[in-house]
Amino acid sequence: MEYNVNRYKEMITLENQRQNLISRKNFTYELEKHIEDSLKLLDFMHLDGAKVVDIGSGAGFPGIILAMACPQAQFTLVEANHKKSGFLKEVKEQLGLSNIEIICNRVEELGQDNRLRASFSLCSSRAVAALNVMLEYGLPLLKAGGRMLLWKGRNYQQEIEQAQNALKLLGGVLEDVWLYTLMEERDRAIIVVRKDKATPRNYPRRIGIPAKRPL
Image 1 (cartoon, one colour):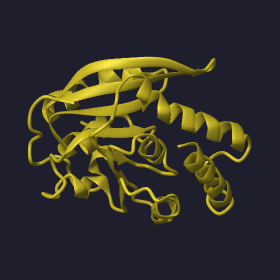
Image 2: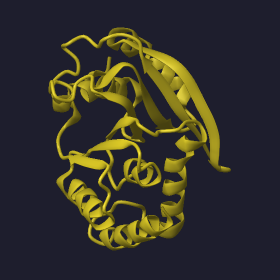
Image 3: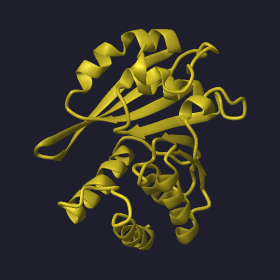
Image 4: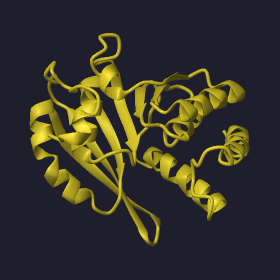
């Protein structure tokens, strides 16, 4: 993996001059922390054999990083921004990551696509939206018994409280919260939600509604 990560660092350094993927103020430091944060998941679970959908992959965190670290897992990276998804496709080609598929589309549409709905064992997402919004994005894509893995900051408990209605409506159950420290000032959590039963067919709602009117 080391060679791939170094090549990825080179590529994102160049791309960051074209589009602002990572803060340019402390770029090198921030990049290392983004990578470390993505890999923290592997301290808690193995992904071998998993079929993972990563929502809002952005510059590749955690999707690209986990795909490099876990060649035996299959990853579908969802990124609606054309420039960012273009960069992800370039990374896939340059690094020869055959265990990745990249989809440039809104996740609300994918959740209603019969080819993708209820087809993944894991759904990952890092710093994309509030928990109650993410549940509507991700749970429809999971098989029964599948898990959402959501990277959150120190306010994770408040997000859990606000997501109780969404959990009930969408068939999710809070299974665990994995806590760790990335830096002294950045306490982190990965919230684990298990899909306990089928998500009603009317979810996710049409594009933009989950974020505008969270459950």
